[in-house]
Image 1 (cartoon, helix red, strand yellow):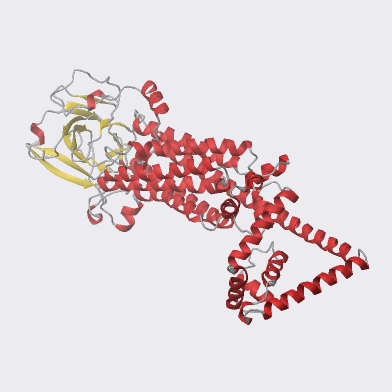
Image 2: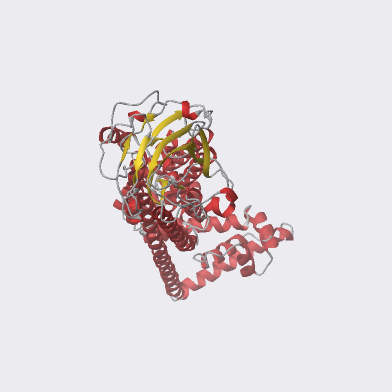
Length: 617
């Protein structure tokens, strides 16, 4: 699959690849100045090179034969200027014995020359011979492939296929490029293939029964459709669950799933077939790098949410922020020049899961429930993409194949990518469901703690009320004295300023509804029997605070007291008990208000020490 070009590369794995991989196809590096001395071994039904430089493919009389590599001589045209009229005079070189040819870079073309000898029939509708032989390619994307037949000294074009060919001129199956061969009984024909614009680093032409190639293409499309349907279904379910975790950031996971959905949709030909697109590979490569950068960025962001990094130590937040910025910068470079500046994006594609794996391990040691599935998803993604990248750059030579299933198995790049994405999506869905359950449990525990605190306060109030006549009389006297002072102060200033204890009354109302997330300015005004505008004016005059600022200050004070009195287990419990809907937002406000994170306050409370902020006072 074409999108594998944007898969990860790391310095360590690159070193292993250099050691473990076979040497590149040296014969594929030049444009060819003459026939090579090497001759491939001949066996029954295989292709052997002719002494004149043209490869002869001996086909069996019956199409019930094996698929095998196409034996062909090749010529690299660096400028892409050689045409059908002059190509026969060029010096072709015998192709490699494994049948894997060098892919032409942008602006270049690759010519293949071969001879087919066997009985054949006529070309049926769609450009494919039913019951005859054909040439196909293991690769998916080509800008243009033209099949010529040599007739005397001239080359006659027979078929033209590729992504840049208008849809009304395309013939045959949509995913694989299949070109029919029509050879009369007892005769042989010489063909030329002109190829340009491919995403892969190599080209693997095959010769075999046309019907088998059609079945291969249909099976590949079915696998792609099943993959797209699975990813879409998991994305829909996960996004619905993710909204309950952090409604502000569920868009990152949706963006990530759209990127994973877009790869096969674009590069397996669905977009081209449905919308009639004729985009060349130069555009598709930039699109691939753009989607890859977005996928890495979105992966970092939603893992940051699932791992609760916003409520964590500052160095972890800074690490993921720097990783996100580096990914975006690498994506800009890759889109600008995919052929010379894509390496930083490749490193980010592999480096970001490694960094996230390290953070996951720390979170797993700290007891975060969803850290385990996230770790599994990142391992699945990294392992699958590395295998896909390995076989993308080092394809398996297809010596023989008896069925379409054999051809699918001979392309581990595709199923390794499917394994990487399906495993990552499945584990991530499990992590999201665990986090949803954990948040619900923590919220219920926080509500129980708040209810217990209210019951304790009510019991203490009853005990205080029943403590004796002397205390009651003292309280009544104090209340009367306070009311008298308030009335005197109210009479000494304009009536519009209110009375000093009004802010205290508002504070008590907030404390009575402290665990209710939706208790805001409107609810406070209703509880005090006035409009929001009047409430804002009186609080401004009385304490120079807006209703929202007053409510926030009361919630933060309650949270600090809750930490030292109850000593809860997590920051999320403190946030929910104090009426905050988001643990990350609460942690940010807490840090701004008290000068330290809630996790630091929790640690100080557990060891019985005072926080730094209070010690300084």
